[in-house]
Length: 340
Image (cartoon, rainbow, N blue to C red; front, side):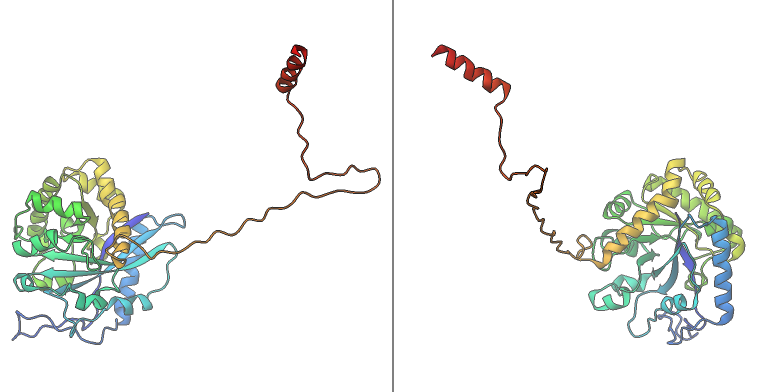
């Protein structure tokens, strides 16, 4: 089974930011329809991704469409663009489509970014919630608070690896606490090859491309692997161009260059995403631990009485059981009679 936890998509007119309000939340249009050209481009990317991962009738591909939101979830402006997209895509045997919401956190997000019980109805349609912190305070909130089991748990902590330097320090205590709570740190291999990443992340100023972005990615990714000690890491695509997709062997080889052993590189691309999906399904249950109980009542067993056979020349089977004395009991009775 193959996984790609970050398949970025952007609808036409889904986000717009006026020049006068650069520091405010980008307004999302209520019209989230994808144009035929965009649908055709997404279908072409899906075909190439299945070809790169060697998807056959015996394999399964789990794909997560990623929608990025800046600063916070605003009930007045937030629109789920992935529901409309999944209705327009054709069905693919062996491919599972999931929905992911990524929230980019900055200084304004320290006061709150919408992951509250009041906005639970907005978050519930998404299968996975990811946080992309850009400050020390938001990174601490993502690791300590929002990684705890709850209906609003964020299972993925994405990092801006292509920036000139990480905007916060990767402390061992924060990283270990997040991993212990079940969160994982995501590494997108799109930055390693200098490819095009999510256009919305570039708009939010948390992504860089080109030679400088590639150099920054290698330095930051090595630091993530060193602090996490190879545990709690998942690798995703985050690719926006068809020419930047890579096969599973190339991805595993890329992770070994970061200092991961071969078994840990395999876990980062196969085992860790699989366990992440299972934990994300438990997010919608009570305290992310128990599922809805079902009472199973076993059927009553009926005892069939022994049958009797009658007729000429046939023996009758009696219901009573005649016990014959065992050889030991017969010898004991004989000795007792001889003593008398």
